Length: 255
Image (cartoon, rainbow, N blue to C red; front, side):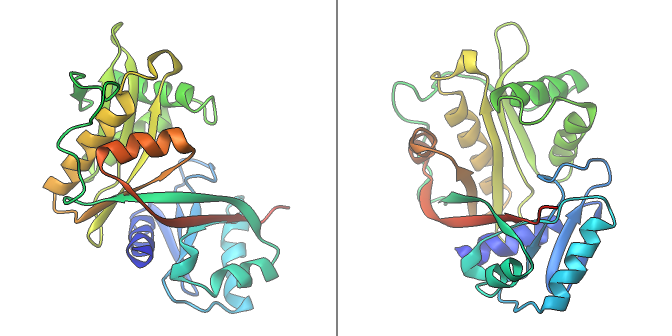
């Protein structure tokens, strides 16, 4: 599965507005933002980069005023980690990922906190996209500020073969949401699962995760994968049908 996840990351970054390929790396640049979580690179599986390749990749980031940063499944390209470290890259994070297939997908989120009965919706208006962006900013404790660009990225995901789903809050805003990238090489990434603090423990995350996973399977994906943080999140995703499979490494070059 590491190869499938890595091939997906390559294909997904190639869809970015200003993707660049350098020495076996694909850098997915988006001129609309300087966020390092949007602008990053990944290796093609199995590459053995030279020092010159890594230097050229660093320069591609520097000339755009961006922090050199990569996300990848290290088992799919074992020679990349040491090559990056020789150039001064350090570990930003190691994230575990889980995979769901049609065979493991639960009939519905199970358990008393599953969110049974919650209505999962697809955004339709500018107000919906803005509410989702603001809710996810709150859910992730302000790791990013809500913005017109964030709402526009969600709309592009929805309109370009991916999907965005949310649970509407009683007052009409967004209680929680997530998005899924358009399928590529047989799989799709489900990301940004977030619930506003006031609505946690009601099954919102499980509901949107289940709905998005089903959408991707209906579009031909053979698997859907996601990253998780903590035992609480892992249990939510396991109830939907996700199973642990491996890790992804995040590296960056400071200074």
